Length: 281
Ligand SMILES: [Zn+2]
Image 1 (cartoon, rainbow, N blue to C red):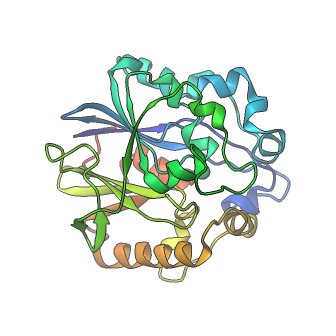
Image 2: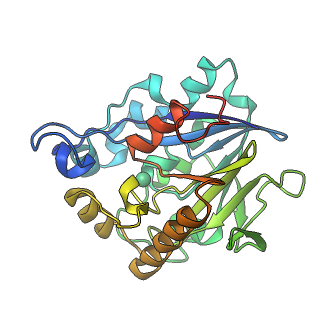
């Protein structure tokens, strides 16, 4: 299994020290949209899609307030579609999108991969797409799936993965990629585990935002912590699942590398191979 780490959307909110934990008050911070492109037995699998080409063509659909606060770079070269091409593949080669959840900075590129099945947790679908469960006002951008993708819905899993309940989203032929329900940030939020040689890589999406949150004495920069609370859908579940991730890192940090979506430190460590010695890119 070869794993490529892609940043599919740089965001530059003001107040670097309170966003990244270092730097100046008035400098711009840096956040990434960390996606994984996995060369699997089932063809190419993309974990999250970041900001897509249609978002960049019409940034107003992302919401004026969101764009003002996060200040995304909106560079087409950063999209997953363009990076897949730059790696020598076609977007049509991407057969599966595994989405941690359907927030706009994760689902923006769904339409850029028309041949892919789109895997999400059933509760996320029922909230964001069919609205059987009412989402918080303005939370999702339905235009991102207006084209009617080929959805694959998953419920709770039965596969014991280090004490978490995993789902073999791609079936039994691909036991090395699991979706792991990890609600809190949204009700259908999942982490995605991918076997990486002798280790596992766990993409934890927005289950946490800053690498120091998984330390024995967890910390988070001020503004990032405020943001985390503001976007919680189920705070108790988020806090509890973060605690489970912390315990996983403490007990199995030699076997499992945990990364999140937006922390540039997690992302750069993966790119440089510091996090995951067996990673190919
Ligand atoms: Zn996010």
